[in-house]
Structures are given as structure tokens and as C-alpha cells.
Image (cartoon, rainbow, N blue to C red; front, side):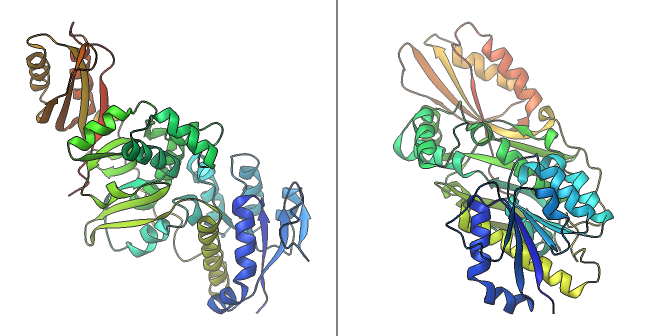
Length: 433
């Protein structure tokens, strides 16, 4: 059989890792696919003398590369929206199969790109776009295909998990740990995508489409970062038997789908609560198999390259066994997508951790509990902490309630004369049936 010919666009950390892995494991890959995989082109802006590019054509003209007749598969590992969007569309129009690790591009423009792929009888493989080396896309599209997925919850950003882990284990402040994360290379100079939850929201958008068979709808994901989490809240949560994790959650509800990324209290005995450092994990609840947890490295050259090359192997197999190369599994696991509504934040339901700083006055606690009760909010636990300066911190855990009712109750509590500062609200999930 003729070799399958690849163009790798981008030779940064991930692209360099992909090239090395393809070269080092060439014989193993040929044994798995029955065909040689040959790298014919790389799209690169500057020389990479540390890589073996012997016999590979190098160019900064990406559009020209994806039009070449000696390219069967385009591997996009540049990142970012532009020029990746236009380059991938051009590749698709020229009948090239596509492998990408670009979660932002897929979350924001995937509906257009996947339609173009279907129209041109090619496929876009994207395992590396979510959770690095954890094969969560394959799990949802194939391994759990017999199930109706009820919900999933994931630690899908390693930077945020590193920050919260350090705050819990060492009592450090958010700002202090963020600075270290930047020094270690876990966080960018501008950490907004990581700490504000945007990166996780991109990934959750993709996971939800695979889990529920719905179009990509990044703009409807409720997103909240971890910048307001204090060491004080981390300690109080632990005193109550919980850990704070920055979770992406997608859940079927009666009226639609909840899509949300936010700091979340989860019981400390949950396995996912004990995923620390820069590791990722995704917990999936399905109706037949029950809960399953997937854990591993969510970023880095090796893990991400592993996922990219696994996609390349799948495509090579499809090229060998299907006439059109379009793949045997639909892009989002469903032949027909469902028009299920994405619920607005106000209609989502969750429990809450509340921390209220109040002046030491008689009747304040009674006023707070009365407001919650009249709003139909049940209190699961309440704890009055030691005085901090002139204020008494009051920590409350509630049973699940809709966000709109909690919004109304908190506005009334905030208006009490004895309340000082903004009420801290962190959502709480048991992650059980």
C-alpha cells in the first residue's frame, strides 16, 4: 500500500512532540495500521535545528502546503483561531483529512468546520483538544456509545487545578501560587484563559456535544473563574469535608442542558476531589455503566502528542478500509444532532457554600436563616467561625436550589445592615446519582 502522507502545521511544543513520536514509533505505527506514515511537509516560521527534518519540505506558506497533492492528512497544532480557521477550511476543500488539538477553534467555529468536513467527505479528528493524553473523546464517542450519558464533570484545566491544590495543601494565596505557576510554565504571562475558566469552557463545549449530541454552543456556557477563591474559603471547605475544584459540568436537566464552569465544592471522599497538581480528570455518569473516572496528564508535549498521533492512526486505518475516508464514527457520535436548549444560569440547579462576614450583633444569624427559609432554600450545615478582626464569618451549606432563587436570597442578605463585604458563593456538587 502507498504511504499516508502528512503535513504538520506548527512545530512548537506539541508539533515537535508529534514529529518526534511519529519518527520514534514509525515501525510500531506501521504494524498497527498496515501502512507507512510519511511526513512530507511542515509549516514552520523559524528553523528547528533540534528536530530531524531531513527529507521534509519546510515552508511558512500554510495555504500552499494544504493544497499540495502529496499531502493526505493535515495535522494542525498551531493553536489560536487565525490563521488556523482558514487553513483548515482550505485543507478540507482540497479533500485533506484533518487532525487538530485546537479546542478554541473547535468550540467557537466547529459547527462550520464539521459541516464542511461532512460536505467534502473527510473527517476532523480532535482527541488532543480535550484533556491532553486522556482519551476522553474516544471514550464518549465509542466506549460509552451504548449509554445515555446523564452528566459529566471534569477538572480540565491543569493550571487552575495546580493553583487550588497549592492553596489547599500549603495555605497559600491565589496571587502567590499564580506567580509560581507562571514561573513554572504552567500559566501564560496572560493567564486569563486558564484562571477565568475560558479554556475549560472551550473543552466542556466539545465534551457536551459528544455526550448529548448537540451543536457546539460555547457562547452559552456559564463561566466563572477562580480569582476570588481565598485561602480562608479553601480551609473552611476542608473543615466541612469538601474540596474546592474548578469544574466543567454538563448535565441533562428536565428543561434542557446545563453547561457551566465554576469553582465547586465536592465531597473529599470523591476520587475526583483527590486529583491534584496539573493533572486532569473527567467523571462521566451514564445510565448503564454508572460512574466512570478518567485521569491523566492534560497537557504537555508527550501526552498531547500521544493523542494527536492516535488520531492520525485512526485516520490511516479509515483511509485503508473506507473508500471516501470520511470515517466510521460521526464527528459528535450522533448521526443527527438534537436541538436541546442550553439552560441560562438562572435556571441551573446546584447546592451552595456561602460565606457571609457580619458584625457581631444579636439576631444576624436568625435574619439570614429566615431569608433563606422564605426563599425555599434548605440549610444543610451552618458554621460560625472565629472572629476575624471585627467581623464574624458565617459559613452555610445549602441543599440544591435554582440559581434565580439563590440570587434573590443573596440580594436580601447582602442588604442587611450588619453584613460587610461581598457574600462569597461557591457552588456545591455531590457528583452522585
